[in-house]
Amino acid sequence: LLTYLAINSNDIRNVCPAIGSGFKVIFHKPNEIPSPLHSSYFVPLGQRKAFTLTATLTTTNENLREYSPDIRKCYFQGERQLKYFKTYTKTNCEYECMANDTLKQCECVKFSMPRSPDIKVCGTNKIMCNYQAMRLWPQDDDEIYPCNCLPTCTDIKSASKVISDCIS
Image (cartoon, rainbow, N blue to C red; front, side):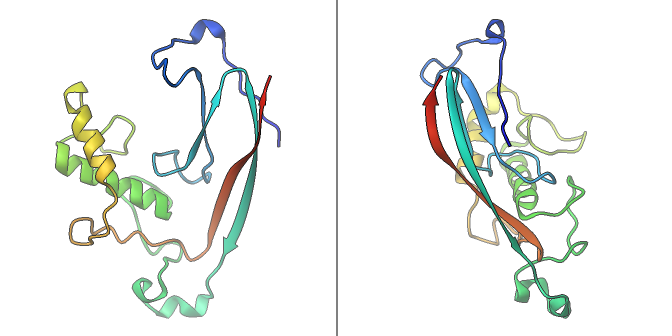
């Protein structure tokens, strides 16, 4: 698959001169929204990058459905519901958990986080709180973060990497 990223030069504002202008590329599953939990790549303007994307399918035998998710270490489709996402994935669960934790710590959530209409979006006065909440997440302590975000029993894991950098 060959994709070109283009931008009108009139739309460029150099607000982060240390980073430069370009595109942030995130590979994610169609049933997940791009989030800070996904790995990303920066493609500067005037450069070309080639990526490889490798997918691995993992399936779990239906006979294991009689065991609890904690024992089999996965959820079958329909076993776990999330508040803000129609489809359960481990990443969606973790992002929802991150949003809930940010809400607890900051009393608001970042504008890009999932939320219900009654939850406040953090203003600029909460930037540092948002940063701290996201920087400290995730913790392995289930008492602080009781999300239990297990993978799905049928899951596609992907890995991507840059295979070439070319200046146009």
